[in-house]
Amino acid sequence: MNKKVNTILFVLGATLFNILVTVLVFFALLLVYAKCIMPFVPESANGWAFPLIFIAAIAAAFVVYRYALRFLLKKIEVEKYFDPLFVGRRRKN
Image (cartoon, rainbow, N blue to C red; front, side, top):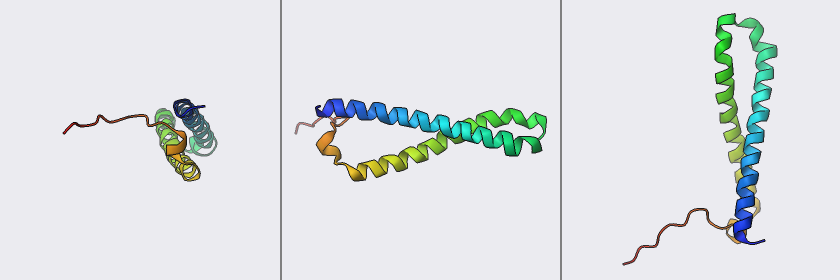
């Protein structure tokens, strides 16, 4: 496989990983809310739970994704296996 195929596969895999982590964190937070917090809050406050849990899941997945990416980039040589996604224009003098 060449660098472009490696780059495309890496981006697709990283996207799937990020979506999977977001979904898992969302369901974990939803479960914690339903079991531990929901019995103690009034019914009128339950409407705010879903948006807050969704935002918290996205934020937590972002943090997990950053740490996983940092760990992966320490293990492999990026320039050797991947093509740059964005190539800047070269200026003529």
